[in-house]
Length: 257
Image (cartoon, rainbow, N blue to C red; front, side):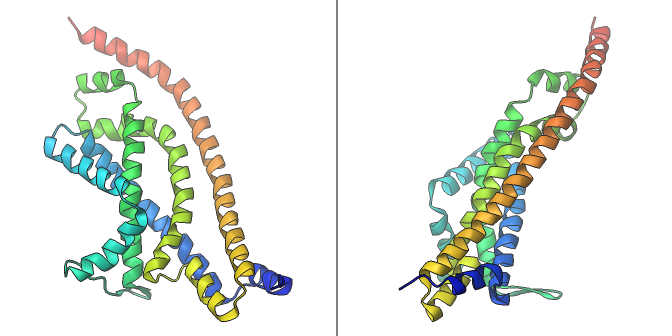
């Protein structure tokens, strides 16, 4: 078969509404799963750093399971395995004017759980990188652990978390194609459906590859801008915080016998 350039340009520059819906669903799946995964990762990271042994063990077990098994297996297990065991069946969910299909819910859950395990280790490493002396100084002034995390530790850890978080979202965009295995009509499944009717395999998969390359490139540019902004704000914050550190140290020394 010869390469059909007119077919290629049509789907690349003038995609159908069905194709655009698949592209939109890919982006929505990635964004929502990344948000949930980051929140879950933060909870798991704090659990690992907790002084409560049961929380530590639960977090370690969750991270071990999710990082030690393939994402594709997790997706199929959550959607098909749980239903086969009569543990959990995903039904369509109506939220006002939005209908969230059961397989979409399962895809988001699987992607979020998998992402949460990786984000937990990223966030834990970011928190561990913060100078312990600051935490000790704040604790000596009566600051609670929760307030210490919100005002001192997490803001400083964030600038170290942002780069790997951006890389994880890049991976999430590409991993979203795996939910096609459970029938989620994202970009890859729509492409496969069109291919089964047109048999223009090379043209269509070239188009879908270029679409994903465009998505990851745009996100790469956005990530650079975000990192540059955080780098600039962290440098300005370091200059502003330095006098306060001396003031805090003098206050602690003045209160000591």
